Image 1 (cartoon, rainbow, N blue to C red):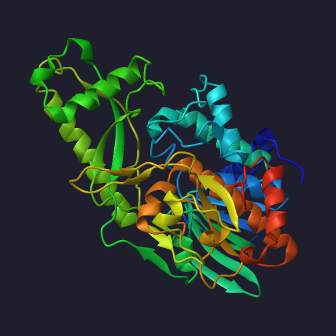
Image 2: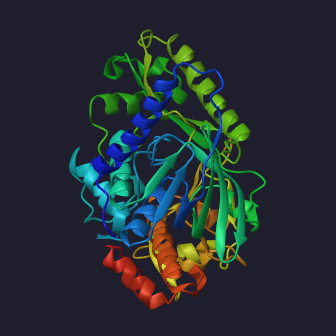
Length: 455
């Protein structure tokens, strides 16, 4: 498939915008222009919904493999948790001295690092997981993700969200609503990368959610004080680490592999943070910002912090857990900590069990030496589905396994698997569950992916 360069794509968009502006200016002022425009259908091979960590990789993989691909994102930029949520340390790409995540996700991360700074040393066992974290520049990552999608021929549609999903005549008909526009997208394959399994639910497949979900985090950076001159005896414990981390960030000393907990921002835990609906997500964001404002006021009453200020804050509360699909296979805690390799394992995951609990310490359990968890294709496919696959934190898994699988590098591996499986399913006129596994492995490897050894 011929690649579409970023400048060409932007030029085309600009020409359309100019034409619209010209036609309106000829008519002069008009009070009856429609505020909502109903457009014709869009026809595509693959529709990816959700432009976060997994969705970007899935779209790039599908586009590069030759399928006409549309990526729908309800926000203003790509990257999701890495960019809008501010968790700018996508990990983990390495385990036990070797890299385990490749493909478009690693390529994107590597280029973001090459334009900023060097990599930490991955040759040694990680000790604690933050020793192998990679810090990226969030805005740069978003721009690179957009560029790579456009180069792969992916049509990006911001500010839009599905409202209805129907399977008919072996194709999906998806109603999309956005700012001043309504679309109907007809596609052969859907990849749900919403994180909330939102499209899975709209399509009528079962989704699962815990009674009590993990808290979220609002991330921010503080400035306007000299940490080294503070009398820490006069600073409450709850603020000390927050102040230390922000000070290290502003001094440019928050690099990885320095034997310190890797927290590139101060953060507040937001209990009950839920991004499932606009109402629950609004509440999570308001709660997060309220906590930050309260913290600023409290800190300004402390000696040495009278001029403290907010230097940066992410626009959204980062959410850890909402809905998961009821998949053909559910990855269990035992599967994860034992590093089980399945016949259809297509990517790795290496992160400790990392369950956040309201009012309690984080429950963390590290994998034993040389153990690396894997992700089976079946865990990305809802039971009873056709021409449908997911990627990201909504993977079919129990709560403990999901607490580790949800991290960015693992989601990138899933995204590549989902993109490749959707391409094969489209080309063969079948569904992702039935694609030939050997062909799927070859396609993933041909695009730089790293397959689990032993399957």
